[in-house]
Length: 143
Image (cartoon, one colour):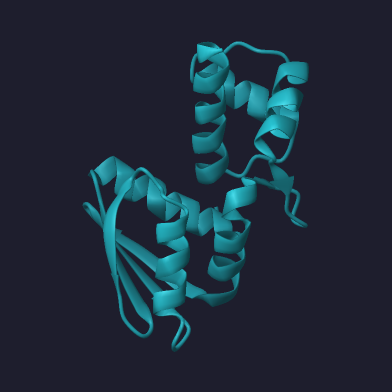
């Protein structure tokens, strides 16, 4: 049970950070993270976790669908500096996108401050800020 939970946590991180299009891609990425498993195992994990496939053919966590839609429609740019991530949105959308980010409960984020069209995200580390930036870029279809 522990191994399955750890593997599914790895899947959660991979799917949030990378554009995974097939179960085979996911098996290969899991292997890079030290999880040797079959495509059948990954298929069961996908069903258990409720992963969905976007129209672009990329897997996304069910709980991230709302966040993905908001980012795809409302975020105009993302830049990172060390542990800080600056997200620009359409006018009036900053607080809504920030609320969706907070709702996703991303482990990498310590907190955020939102204005009308700008969000400042404070990450736990430089690596975490890079992961948050990668996730946002992926949701925008740019990664």
